[in-house]
Image (tube, rainbow, N blue to C red; front, side):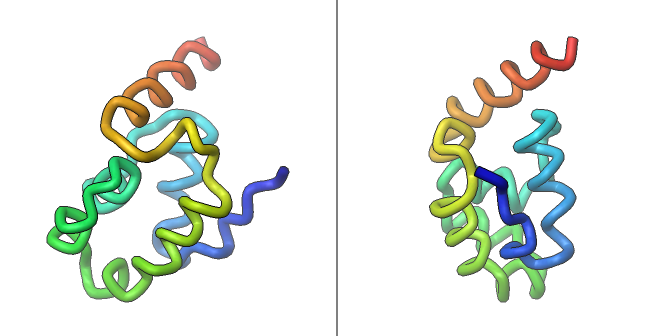
Length: 87
């Protein structure tokens, strides 16, 4: 399955793609979303990210690989595993 990054708001695409494909940690807003911390995501969002939160949530559910999101532990494991693939 090809991941459809175009679903995301433009300013979030590169950060999400780097995270999913290379295990590079994203900024604080995407980190909160990936770790399933909604209130924190809203608190960290700029006006464009807040406006696009529905699209980001839809992307996570429909497009992002299940092992890469849902908790901080899952995110940490994803980053660790991606780092080992590139080594």
